[in-house]
Length: 131
Image 1 (cartoon, rainbow, N blue to C red):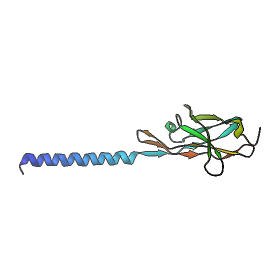
Image 2: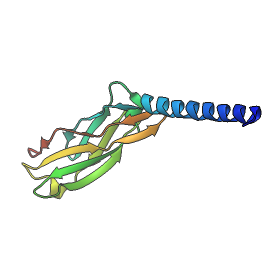
Image 3: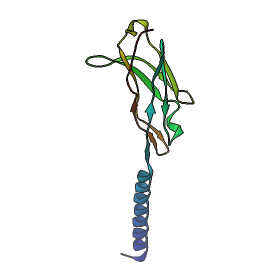
Image 4: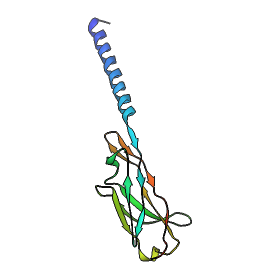
């Protein structure tokens, strides 16, 4: 192997090592941020907020789905996208507002790019009391 071939081989190996190191570095800095979704009621609107205490990018533009807890698969009542402050609201159809029925909100995990991932969250269940 002549000198030019050895230099080229060494440079190629160096580039491959550097590329592998950069890939590992990028993977190591990817961060999952916790999310929390709250639910409240102001009949017929259920509303709440998506919170992320360490990453405000995880609050706006998140899709929140409101479910009614029933035997078997829970019923999807409606959905909304959070505003710039993480707030959401869903109007519940009148026929679903029966005392004793339970509702909860869910926000799915989302990858925002730039090494930011927001975790999924489910609110506590609230029981419709009547009104």
